[in-house]
Image 1 (spheres, helix red, strand yellow):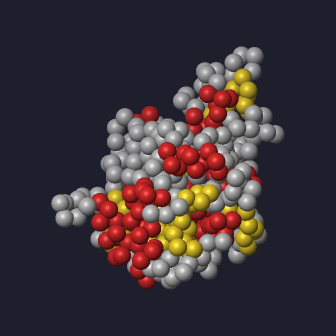
Image 2 (spheres, one colour):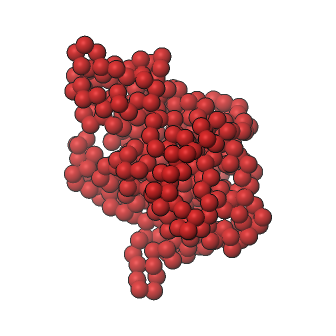
Image 3 (tube, helix red, strand yellow):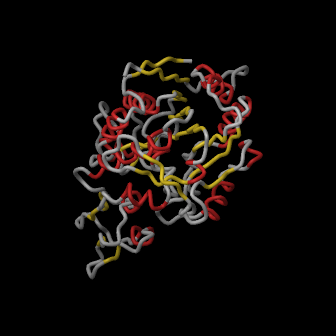
Length: 370
C-alpha cells in the first residue's frame, strides 16, 4: 500500500481562530465532508474518562464533530463500552453517570451518549474478522456493531499493556464487550516483583476479580486462575512491583486489538481524529492521570488509523521530554523511543504491523500541516 496522508494542526490560537475552529478546519482539510453519512447512524467513539482522571478529551471537541456529522445528514451518537475492571464505568448505569459527571451531556456534545454493550457488558454482536490469525469473530458492543459509520476521537497516550493507546486501541479494545475484553486480555498475566512490593494493598483493593491477596509476609500474590489480565494492578502500583507479562503478551494483545478493529471498520465509512494532548503514561481508565510525558502537540486526523497512530508516535518521540515525569523515573536519556521506555515489557509496533497486514492502512505516511 502506498503512503497515506495524515493531517495535523498545532494548538496556537488567535482572536479570529479558536481551538474549536482549528479542529473543524483540520477535519475539513482531511476530507471529512467527503464521507457518505446521509441517514447513517454514526458512532462517535470516545473514552469519557474515569472520574478522577483529567486527561480525557473535553466535551466541546465532541460538539464540533457531532455538528459536522449532522451537516452531512448523519445521525451521530457518542459511545463507549463498559470496562472489564472495577470502577465507575463497569456497567451502563454508572458509566453514564460518570460520563455526565465529566461533562458529556447532550447539551455539551450535541448528541446522546449510548453505552455500546448494554447494562452489564453482555449486549454484543459476533462480527466476522477477515484475515485474522487469532480469531474469526469479534465480540463487539451492539451499538457499534449496528452503526453505519464510525468516527473516532482518540486521546493519544501511553498504555501499560500495549505501549500506547490511539485509534486502533480506542476501537478494538474500547468497543469490545466484556467477553471480548476478556479474550483480548487473557494473554496477559501480570506478576509481582516481591522485592519491590511494600504490602500497601492498593492492588488488592483495585482488583475487580479477587485475584490478588497479601500473603503472610504482606507481599502481593496473584492467583492467575482468577486473573483476567486487565493489568489494573500494573497501573495502580506506585512502587513498580506489579509488572505486565514479559515476552509475547503485549504483541498478541495488540494483534488481537487490530483484528477487532478490522471487524468494526470493515465496509463502513470511517474517520479518525487523535488528540496528542495531556500525553499521560497510562490509560484514561484509571481514576488518576500522571504528568504528561511531553508538551501538548496538537490534533491529527486521517481516514487511515494505522498511519494516524504511527504519525502520533513519531510526533511524541520527536518532542522534548518533560522533566519530572515517568520518563524521568525510568531514567530516560532524552532521545529515542518514549513509550517503550516507560513500558519496557510492551511491543507497540506489533499492532500496527498486524493492522497493516489486515488491510486497515499503512505505517507509511505523509504529514500535512493545516
